[in-house]
Every structure is written in C-alpha cells, then in structure tokens.
Amino acid sequence: MNLRSDTANYPGGWKLIDFPTQDGAPIITWYNPVPIVYGTPLTATQLNAISTQSGTFTYTPPLGTVLSAGPNQMLSLSFYPFTSGNVYSDTVNLTVNPEPLTATAANAAMVYGTAVPAPLTGSLVGVVNNDGITASYTTLATSASPAGPYTITTALNDPKTRLSNYSVTLTNGTLTISKAATMTSVSATAPSVLVKNSVTLTTHVASTTTGTPTGAVTFMDGSTALGSVTLDASGNAQLPISTLAVGSHLITVAYPGDGNFTASTSSVISEMVQDFQFNIGTGSVVSVTILPGRTATFTIEVAPTYGTYFPNPVTLTLSGLPTSATGTITPSTIPTGGGSTPVVVVVQTAPVIASNHTFPSGLTFACLFLPVVGLLTLRRRARGAGLLMLMVLGLAIMVGVNGCGSSSGIFAQAPQTSTITVTGTCGTLQHTATLNLTVQ
Image 1 (tube, helix red, strand yellow):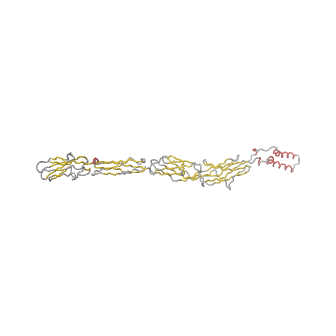
Image 2: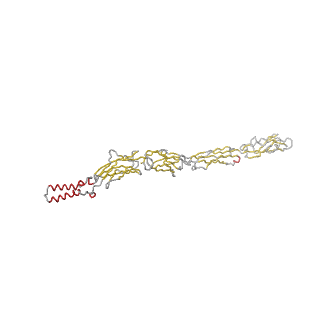
C-alpha cells in the first residue's frame, strides 16, 4: 500500500492507493488540481500525475478538453508500465468555476418625434470557447413616446445552451428622449389699421420633427402682453384686438413649450395704427351765405395721420341740413389705400313759398290796397299819365310787400344760419367737421 496527498477529498490530506504487492509495483502520485475557470482547457497543469516507474499515462478526459462549469468533476488516468503488462488507475477531482460574463447596454438619446436609434448597442465581455453567446438591446420607446427616460433592456442569446457555464451580469441602459424644437410665426390681417378698428393677429407653432405643440401662446407688443390664447389642434391661435394706440407696434408671439416641445419666440412684425382728420386750409370753404333756393358749395379735406394712406375705408355723411334742404358729399367713401382727399359738400336750399310767409297788418295792408283805390279814383278822372304811375306803384308794392311793413330780411323772414356736420366713420372711430350755412 502507498499513501498520496489528497487534501481536497480526505481530511488527513493523504489518499491510500492499493497496488500489487509484488516487487517492482509503481507508486503513482497525482494531486487534486487547483480550480480553474470555465473555458480553460485541461493542460499538464491538471493532468500531471507521476510514477516511480516508466510508463504511459492515459487521461480521461484527455488533454485540451474544456470542461463545463461545476464542482468536483472527476479526472481519471490509466498507467501502463513499460516493465509489465499491468494497468494502474487513479482519479482526482477538479472544480471548474463559471466564467464571468458581463453585458452592458450603451445609453442612447433621441429627439421627440424622431425614430428610435437603431440598432441599440452595448458591450459583451467574457464569452469563451466559441460559445456563440450574443447580446441584444431593446426598448419599449417609440417615436411617439413622450419626452423622458426609457429603459434599454439587455438580453442574451444562447444558441448552444452554454449560458450555465457563466456567471452573468446584465446592465440595462437608458434611452433619453429630449424635447423637440419649435418654430413660432406671427402675422396680421393688415400691416396697418385705423385706431379703434380691429386687427387679427395670427400665430402658428410648428414642430421641427413631428407632432403638434400644445398649450397657450402670449401675443406681445414689445414687452407688454396683449393676451394669451390656447393653440388649436393644428398649432394655430388668433387674437383680434382693437385697443392698440396710434403709432408703431412691434408684435411678437412667445410660446413657453410643453412636455414634448421647447419654447420659442417669433420674429418681429410691425403693426401701424393710424388716425385721420379733417383739414381746414386756405383753399377750404366752410361758411357760405345764400338766398333761399340757391345752392351752397363747401370744400374741405380729409387726410390720414401717422401715415400717408387710409388702411381702412372711411364713410362720409352729412347731418344738420336746413329744413327741406338736400345735400350731397363727394366722395361719400374714402377707399382703403386712398390718401389725402378733397371733399365737396353741395347743399340745395328750398325756395320761398308765399303761403309759408306771414304778412304784417296795418301799413302793409294799406300798401296792398292802395292800387285798387287809385284805380277807382281814376275812373272819374281823365285817363292819362297819372293812371300809369299809380299802377306801377301798386305793382311794385305787391312784389316788394316786405318793404312796406317790415325792416327784416328779404321775403319777410329773418336770416337763418344752420350748422352742418360732416362725419367720417370707420368702425367705432369717428371724426367731424363743421360747416356754416346762412340763408337770407
């Protein structure tokens, strides 16, 4: 009998081996090898038995074999001495530890509304023995996923069923979806408008990728907020406004962003707010005196202020005409785009109607009756030059009856002065000019 060291399987550290007792029997020495890692082929480091006699060792499994991972795997040998035909055997135990295998997903990034990066990548470390193990990386995020972080999941593919030989560590990654940029524009229904009249400001907020921004925008006049409006399903918003003061206004629109889109501000547009006025110049006629039944002609000018043309049409009307008088105003409308315009007002007064006048009594009546008395007297006298004189005098008194009994104006009525108003209107904006007409 012989003793050999075997601390792994025998507490005393020695293994008792039986050999033939005849003279010349070999003594074989073979220790339990130090544990190895999966993927390490068997070498002379493990298959290293020795004998006191010359001969041949045959190992099972043989040199170069890669063992699966596991504890206390048996290695055996057969020894064939050169000096005899006997065969001697022995065994040891070998522990094969799992190979560390690490798969780590690489972090990735994308913008909201764009495609998920493909392929998602990562690193795989520790595959040995041509085991063909690969890693794949996937995420549940899509191009329509809201901005934010998403997990990139790491998985292993094991076509040869070798994964049990590894100590596996999987590390997931993160896909970060950032907000998409936006573009904001602004426009107006007209570049200029008359004060107190409405102009509509329109904005459109668009994504630089896909999707439609949401939320509210703020219309700005310089640093002053004009109002906030919620975007519709197409990213549009409108703000009608009629409170802008006369002058130039620098209009922008500010979009604050939402969960998927960044903030943006439009470029500046200029909105001109104008006014108009009636001008009374050296060539104007604003005061006229005429006889009844005659026509009065007035001339004034209407012109834009804070600009050279009318951004909106202005309608001209007359009021305050004398009783029974008619009037025309030319032109009656100043069109959009028109500039300073002469305005002609023509007033046709009513003629005098005798029944509408009251004659004085007393002296006036006497004056009317005088021709009749004269005619009767002349019947008794010779007809001659006296008759002709009396008839002429009577007719003159009848025509100019007011001269006999009153000191008032022509046709026995006092002069009448009327204030005629010319009104220019555009929406709620109005301006007026005053004309004076005196009828004798």
